[in-house]
Image 1 (cartoon, rainbow, N blue to C red):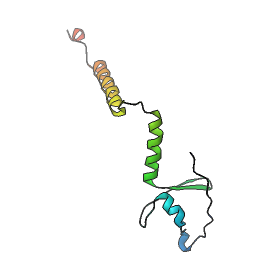
Image 2: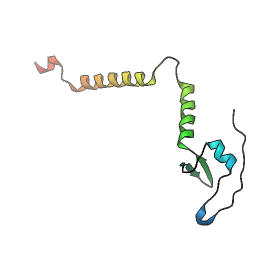
Image 3: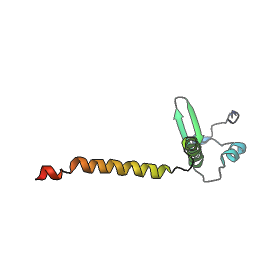
Length: 98
């Protein structure tokens, strides 16, 4: 379920600083010294954290994951097949060598 849109109007401080409201800092799990990620697209910005981005990416990946199937094992199996095909392509046949 999508979170409700909240709009904050914040004053610009000296040197371009903006103080995030405590409600927003709590929602993002931010503490003093934490780093945030700001994405700019046109005249809009999105503020998030690396941890929240990872959680979002994991949730998206989970929708496509097959239960009981290791994505890593599937990837490695595909790469082994590709590597074997490449070896067969570049290795001269025993008949050609004779």
